[in-house]
Length: 209
Image (cartoon, rainbow, N blue to C red; front, side, top):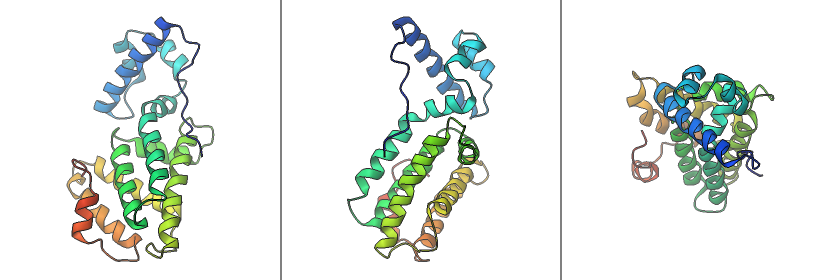
């Protein structure tokens, strides 16, 4: 499966590319601070361009989000492919899911946009979300085949569960519980068996949860 990401237009002039990259850098800074519902008008104003220029590059909010998340999507897809044939299936799945939740939490509120994109094939986020869900499902199937993950879940179910965990991490009153709840959910995924504390600690990247 190839990544659905699209590069900036190759025929873009040097000055136009510079302006595009500046606009994207400003958008990234604002969305990191304010979340995915940040004002597009404010992004254009702070980048020193007209709103029409922003829409010419990013016709929809979802198109902007897809571009902002492109690096994270590519890295997640590459890691999933690497994990498919490496290590224990349960460890591979947990490691990838932790990285996924961390990536989704980069921009507050993006999990809601992703959920909507799954049901909307016209969304600029749809192809990326479908690709991420597909590699998630492949790792799940591998763990199920090895008998470590329960068989009454599919990729859509698992994606919904980790999406909910990402949403919890966005909530100030609940964020401190996100790590513990991740472990609870993973225990349920693996036939109700809680992950050993030592294994859980090894799989959690520094700074996540």
